[in-house]
Image (cartoon, rainbow, N blue to C red; front, side, top):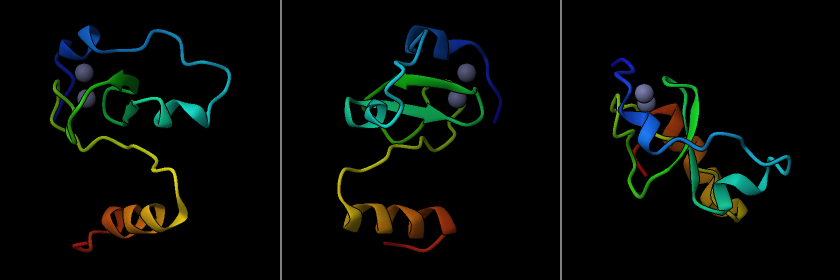
Length: 73
Ligand SMILES: [Zn+2]
Ligand SMILES: [Zn+2]
């Protein structure tokens, strides 16, 4: 998995100062490309890395943490 430049189409140039609100407004983070993108999918359209999106409530967040740890939810 490696950045091949496709993410530029989706990339958010400058994340808003309100950092916590980014995920909630549909932004997702690719840790491989090191960008925030607006993309309706679970994986980066560029490199295929699983995107990080922070859910709103605690329950979903706990699920996400489990998912990140590699458990099936
Ligand atoms: Zn990329
Ligand atoms: Zn990527």
